[in-house]
Image (cartoon, rainbow, N blue to C red; front, side):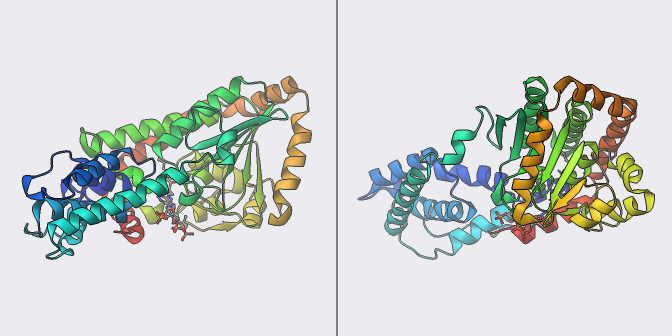
Length: 395
Ligand SMILES: CCCC/C=C/CC(=O)SCCNC(=O)CCNC(=O)[C@H](O)C(C)(C)COP(=O)(O)OP(=O)(O)OC[C@H]1O[C@@H](n2cnc3c(N)ncnc32)[C@H](O)[C@@H]1OP(=O)(O)O
């Protein structure tokens, strides 16, 4: 939010979603100017339509090519003023179009048709069902949820993005927790697909601005955060984190609300809040000092010290560390045995252990969320997020 929040001026940051919506317009535009009429006009119009039907997002680079070719095919060489330095998306679009120089309209049209045809065949072949997809419980796009041996496993499933948490993911996790609280499993496990457990909040979340502007975005995000963390505070069954790799931000802080945290020795625990102009969430401002003492909590939460799995275990945040080579086998053998323990006894014990704290945790959660609502509107936060997004931009 703050990213775009500097004003609409920065609305064109390199966020995928923003780029997508920005670039879609010309690519799917049905109107083709008269000057683009020619031998392959029909193919061109058909290709323009087919772009809408692609099953897979072709990525920013390809979308820019499509944009540039479309403009060249329909309007000829770029003749509009160069957008300002901070108008990043429009500048990227202008650069792509301008780079086509005096390419004839007919050639641009043909290149557009060829590009779309290539995209269609790769999109069709990649849409074959992958074995993993079979396991997915219906209704979840960002998680893989399985239930066996009395264990419900919620796996974050955006490995290419290090399981960064999108708005959709927060919502799906809340739904999954709600369902797991009612199913017949005895314990619920969180883990990540791929080499990361999770890289925390998806920083592109900050760029999807609603009509009400950045203040509304900050408000909505604070509500989402409060509700999300609230689900962990209230979760009635033993909750286990199987931390398969590095964990960042909110994926670390909420570990203080888990009942067991098993970590691979490859895992690290990092909360770079100050670096991002942000402040602790997930009730960590309360749970971390309780778990590891104020001095160690400060090192993590204020100074962003990254802990190894061994260090996190020594501080009490992690229950046990396993060698990565045997991590999955050892952990799941252990969890299967635990899941056969009498269900009611386990659940009642969890209530006894956790209930004293619930009210306090909800109050802390509300306070942290409201402080972050302000932080997200700050220059410090805006600059840090912009910095990340610019570094990662491929345009
Ligand atoms: C509404 C509730 C809000 C709750 C607020 C919570 C606060 C937090 O969680 S703060 C923590 C936020 N997270 C970060 O600051 C981590 C940012 N990411 C990184 O520093 C690095 O990506 C990494 C150290 C995690 C991994 O670095 P590595 O070089 O190994 O891989 P990359 O090439 O950087 O990543 C691959 C791919 O994934 C994208 N990505 C990774 N993490 C995030 C993220 N948090 N947000 C958005 N995108 C992320 C990265 O851009 C790459 O994408 P491309 O392949 O498209 O370039």
